[in-house]
Image (cartoon, rainbow, N blue to C red; front, side):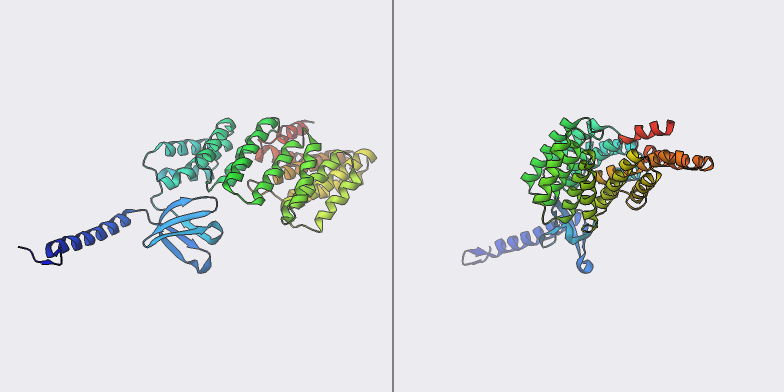
Amino acid sequence: MCTKLKGFSVNAGLVFITAVIFIGILSQALFAQQPRDLVRLKKNSEEFKGSIIKETFKGLTIQITNGTREFGWNEIDEVQYDKTPSLWYQGEKEELDGKYPQAAATYQKLSEKTDTRDIFKQHVMYKLALNLQLSGNLKEAAAKYDQLLTAVPDTKYFREAGLDWIKCYPDRTKTVEALTTLEKVSTLADKSGLNDEFKFKLKLLKAQILTPSDPQTAKQVYVQIKQQAGNLPEIKAIATVGEGLIMIKEKQYPQAEQLLKGVLGESANPTALAGVYYGLGEVCFQRGETSNSSTDYKDALLHYLKVNILYYPAPGDDIAVDYYLAATFQAGRCFKKMLKFVDAGKQSEYNDMANALFQEIIKNFSYHPLAPKAKEEMSK
């Protein structure tokens, strides 16, 4: 016989209390089995341990014992993932060793595993696309980038994947495909709410793609960027350089030189400065072509070598890569041009220096359109 207190039995109370305790113990047990990721903040090196449940281009969300916390990437110093698959480490090592086809195969295997944590899936998709691209399998890489941005439109890797997808057309001959892809990425960026700086980078890339086939339209894009990017001085500087380089192609040398020198006093951006010195080198080189003067070629060579020595491009900066390689290529041509101005004893030395510059392009940037041209110059 049980005792009742205002409609509540002692037995029922015990059952209820027992259930609460059991649920509490079960919850703790389940939480203990969850991944124990770590997020360390820049401020005071504060740490949060729990399960990362979401990552976007803005930041991440981590489930901790008393709820969830959200942090922007600008707040985070380090992220450590628990229960990382062994294949992930294998793929990373292969990528670091430059074994891109093997890394792509490893990430492909990892993408097919059904027990991979959800939080790793977008990492694997991006790494698979990237290593396919680095392997030269551009068609399949482009398809994988498309798959990632379609499946996870706010992915942590939106900026990298978006730009890399467009760069799957590096020979500049597939202008239509590149521009179509750029428009897709731009539309996705608008829907996802990415910031203006990324959108301006897309516009810079558009102008770069257009320059060989349609320099006038490219020039208009650069001018528009300058007008609209008032609060982004680095973007504005790079656009000014792009405009100046097109003016050189139009043989407006004095105007281009004035425009480029103006950037020197206003910007410390390495990409912009690489473009400036390359452009000033082009002005001097064209003077040398007209005057046939060793002085003009020497002046051009000094500008080109500044780029080669001081402004090695950062990974992923496609515009800086173009400036660096163009300057390196033209420096080699300068040494070749100057052969007729030096004593016979120095001609071999100048020829060797030219070939060393061409060889750098062939060895380290074999995918670039200037690589076959460098081979041609070496054979002369």
